[in-house]
Image 1: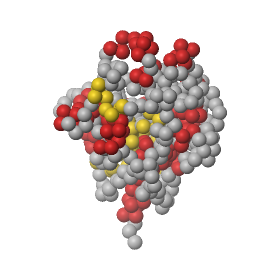
Image 2: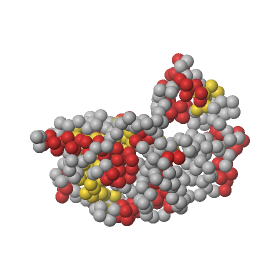
Image 3: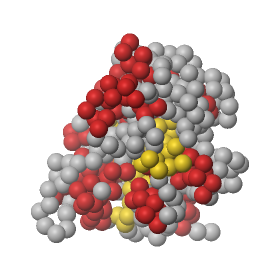
Image 4: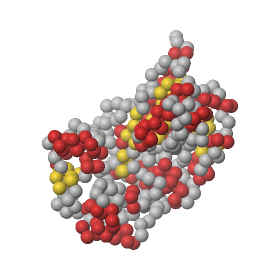
Length: 414
């Protein structure tokens, strides 16, 4: 088995939590010198040098020093939009919040929600077709993972009306109709730079117009919140302007869980992952991936196979670290996608040459084993891949409970 001696630019950047441009600057300044990998001739970093110089940047894998747990003082109600298969909803439920209703357009995801929580009110269909005014002043939190869409800019400052036609407009419309003390939107990290940041600024100005102040935006790394996966979610929190209570994001835990934590009995789960159905690789791909060691990818293949497997992209440069990628037991999984077998986003099992099964996918997203997914294998992978990791949702839920406890105490001080 090949032991990796080098990190690519992308791998070193992700490991120590610094941007690629910072690493390039350090290289120019002599702080961290890149070398040429003997076979590919790409610029890479010595694994030993990275670990020795930047141990302070690398998360420790020992004891937790914080806890975000807090108990709700009363029953708090959540209205969830764009609910998907329930990752965020289950997480919020675990934190003590109660689900009043969920809206989702995908019929398979709706079937999943109903199958697992018959008592939840599932509003299936296009959000545009629903009026939520019956929930006015009856909901404590409105949440929603709205898709990232560009706005048309009618003026210097985007207004509520200018956002019409986008799903964020529908999110804002529901918040306006319901008037909760706090609302939470979640999205991909890429929203920060979408349309050079204009999209996010537009969202902030829309929420400002309907009466909500925006908490400084954070991107939460799932690996810091008991999720064995390198997934990031941007969190957008709005607090109604009549409320002067600070929202505090969940504190990151020091302990980082790896793939073994997800698939085997341990701290996260009390048994090994159940057997289940899963996608398969074609014979040609199996022959290639059989040659990739755990934690390896296409650059760990023999040079002639690299060129054949990669085709023209072999000569284009860049890491492309998701191609022919086999995950290692002792590392968190890379971000799951909607399909586990696509060439750009391979997520191969450490020991067996196959994609992760449906239940393995669900474990990596920290869904409980009794949470069943409806539809075909492809539909199930899609639902799981699109979900907010359950444990991340739980930690955000504790922050919401903490905020709401303080808010309601401020209304009735003793």
